[in-house]
Image (tube, rainbow, N blue to C red):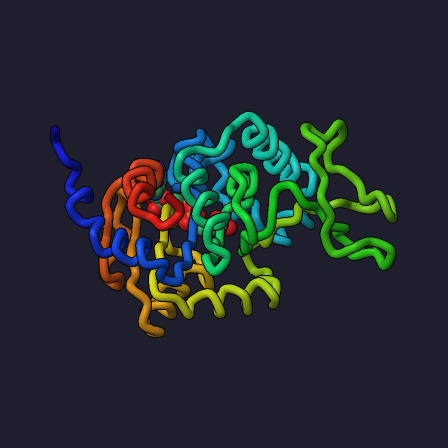
Length: 254
Ligand code: APR
């Protein structure tokens, strides 16, 4: 039997999980690539050759809401046809078993929730939520809308008939203060795993450094190098689905 190089490195994680160490996990697009959701960056993730930074902004929406909605409607259709993978399933088992575990995701695809994860901290919102672009007084800040595909683009606000916007956080927009506070609180942990994120987008990318500063044992799981690779205690170079599958038998969730 040939062992993957990372299979010899699992002991420090396994030990901590076995004794129920307080654990926080931060995930990015890489946990969903195994489900067929393309990553946000890289050629594979591009939609009609647009970079996300040019479409995921309030200015882009103001300029051409139809184009931005075409992109989100395409992503909603794509994700609706995908299933959670083993990485989502293992994390879901951990959150259900251990109420102190915190799962923070930058993903907007909803696959953690579909796998059964509880208390997910959605750092960048959700593809499955919408809001009124004009923040009309009768509408809540965000509400769930699972329509896929939308019959007419751009869709309109059910409260005022104005424009609807995707319930995600765009470049240049602030993170919900409650989400920021919950994430900061979650960095007070003993084990912090950063999984499948290019660690380029702040403030999410800063959480692992904060956790380490506060004494956590920090681990990166990613087949590729990222800016945080040199600043964590352990790097496991492989896919989220393979590595979490290998770690799971060692966890207290068994
Ligand atoms: N397992 C683990 N990691 C993987 C896998 C896999 N199977 N496949 C790819 N990766 C890694 C890539 O090497 C890359 O480092 O996942 C990372 C995905 O990076 P991005 O596409 O940049 O996604 P992410 O870090 O989540 O982006 C952050 O940027 O566009 C904004 O708001 C958007 O939430 C998003 C944020």
